[in-house]
Image (cartoon, rainbow, N blue to C red; front, side, top):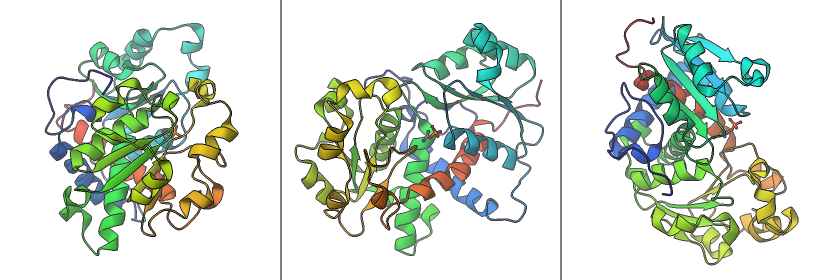
Length: 334
Ligand code: CP
C-alpha cells in the first residue's frame, strides 16, 4: 500500500483503536464479522437495544460530510446503550479556527470513552489517537487513507450473501467463502480510502482482487498492493464474482483526472450493456453515495445483482461489533 500503517499485525481489535484494515490479521477481521452476525438479530428485535456499553460515552466527530457512516455509527452506539455526543462541525468552534487538537481536548474534557472520527486529512485518526491515548479511536474515513468499517461491512455483506445462497450459517464459514473469490474494484482507486480498506480486507480473507480504471486514477504504487490491473475492462467484468464500483470523488479533484464525465462513463461506467457481461450470479456493490448515470447506471444500481442497500443496512451491526470490541475492557467514564 502507499501508506505506512502500524508495523505489527493485530490479532484482534478487542480493547484497541481501529485505524486501518492494513493492520488487522485475517483472524481479527473474521472476529468482527462473526460478532456483527450476532448483532444482526438484535437489529431485528422490537426493542433494538442491548446494555453492552451502558454508561459509556461515544463522541461522533464528522469533519467531512457523511450520511451512511455517521447515521449507522450513531445508531450502533445507541443500540449498545452508549451515550452519544454528536458535534455539528458546521456550527461548532471549528469554524472559528479551533484546531483539531483543541477540539479533541475539549470533547475529551466532557468525559468520553471513544471517538468516531471522519476527517479530510489522511492520518487524522492516528493523530487523534496520540492526543487522547486513554480514549478508543475509530477511524470513520481519513482523507485518501482508510475507511476500515466500510471494508468490514463490505466483506460482511459478501460473506452473508454467499452463505445465504448456499444455505450456510455465515458465522460458521470463517473466511472460507473468500478463498479464490474474484473481486473487481472499478474507478477512482487513486483517491479512494474505500478501495484501500476493501483491498486490505479482501486480500487478507483470501480473495483475488483486480482493479480497473483510467491510468490517471490508479496510484503509481498499485502494483505493490497485491492486486492485478485489468488490461481489458469487459473481460474483467466476465471474470468477476463481485464488482465493486467506486464514486468519482469530485471533491478530491477527480474531475481533472478524466477528460469529461461522459468519457469516463463511456469507458468505465457500469452501463446496462456492460452489466450484461457479468456472470448471472455476480454481485454488484457500491459504498455510496452513488453518482447515478456516471459510474453506475440506475437500472444496474437498482437491479437484481446489486446488494447496495444491504451494504447500508449491514453498517449498523458491523459498527456495533467494532464499538463493542474496541471498547471492551474500558473502565468507567471519567
Ligand atoms: N460510504 C460512505 O462512507 O458514505 P457516507 O459518506 O455517506 O458516510
